[in-house]
Image (tube, rainbow, N blue to C red; front, side, top):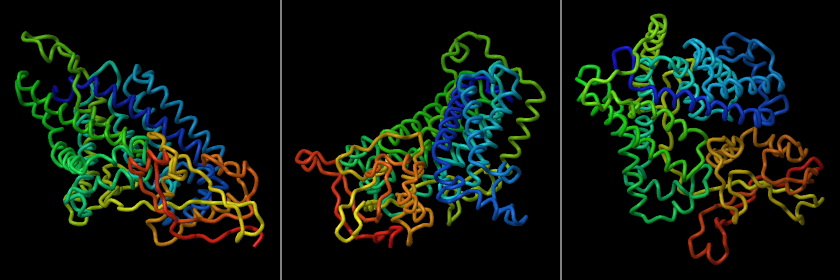
Length: 495
C-alpha cells in the first residue's frame, strides 16, 4: 500500500467489482422471477398497497427506505423494466466495460445498481427482510468508489471493505457467543445441517458426520469469526514499514481472508443461504494483494504499479471514507453492546449496518406441508401434496443447490413454524392455490392438479429429520417424517 493508493490491490479490485456486479445480476434476476407473484399488483403482500399507505402522510413516507416508487407509480411492468435495466448494467460490469472508462463511469453504474435494488428492497416487506439484502446494498455502494482499471484502488475504499467483512464476520461470531448455549457447549452443528432453512445436496452427509467433527466445526467457526477478522487490518501497518516487512503483512492479511473464504465455502457446500456466503467470499478477496506482481518479491527494486489517482477522485473517496466512519459508529457500538442487534440498519440509506445470523439453532425441523384435493367431501378425500423447489416435501428427494439464487417463498415457509400464528401472506398463498393462480404455481416445483383448481386445500404439520445410513439403505429415503397435526383445516371456496 502506498499512502492514498492501494497499489498492491489491483487484483482485489477486479474481484470486488466483477463479483459484486455478478451478485446484483442474480438479485435482479431473482426479483424479476418472483417479485410480481409475491409483492406485485396481485401479489401475496401487494407493494402498491404499502406504497399507498406510506405516501398518505409524510411521517409514514419517512418510514420507508428510499425507493423510486414513491416518485413514480408502481406497476409490474415498471418493476420488470427496473430489473432488466439492473441486469444489463450488472452484466456490463461483470465483463468490465465501464471499468475501462474514467472512474466516475463505474461509480455511476454501481450507484444505479445500489439505488435500483434499494427501491425494490424498500417495498419488499417480509420477503426482503434478510440480512444479505443490506449486505448487497452496502457492498454495491462501496464498489462504486473502487475506480477504473487504469489506476490503483483508493486505500480508504479497500480498508472500508475490510471493515465491512469485519462487521459481517465478527458480528455473526458475537451473536452466536451471546446466543444459545449450543454455541458455547459446541453442539450447534449437531443440529444445524438438518434444521437450517434450506438444506443442500450434501447437508445430510454433513449431518451424519461424527460428533467430534461437529464440535470441531463450531470451534473453527468461532476462530474464523471472532479471531481472524482482526488480522484483515494487518496490511495497514505496511504504510509505516519497509518493503521487506510489507510483504509479510500482506501475506498475513491474505491468510486471514483465506480462512474466511474456506469457512464460507464449507457453508456453500452444505446449505443454501442465497448470496450471503458468496458475498462474504467476494468481499474477503479485498485482502488479497496482486501476489504475482514482481515488485512484491524482487530482491532489487522493481517498478511498482502506478500510484496516480486523479485529485478529484481522492477528494470524493476521502469524503466517502469520512461518511462511512460516521455512519458506522452505531454498528461499532452494537458489536459490543449487551443487547446486540442482528442485521440492523441505523440509517435510511442502509450503510454501516450491523450483521449476524443464527444466534440460536433450531433443534427440530417442523415443516408445513400444503395439500389439496379435487374431491367434494374433504373428510373422505384423496389429498395430494404441493411440492416446493427448495424446502423439503418428498422424503426421497435429495435437496437441490440453489444459492446464490434466492427462493424467497421457500425461505419464508421455514420461518412459519417459528411464529406464534400464521402470517397474512400465507393465508393469501392458500387462496392463490385455490384459484390455481398461474404465477403462484410457477414458484412451486410441482402442482399436483396440473393447473386445475382444487376443491380444497389444507396444511399439515410434520416433523422431519435426515434418514440414517441404515434407513437410507433400506428405503432410499433422504428424510424421515412423522405427522404432527392438521394445522389449517380444509379451506375452499365452496364451504
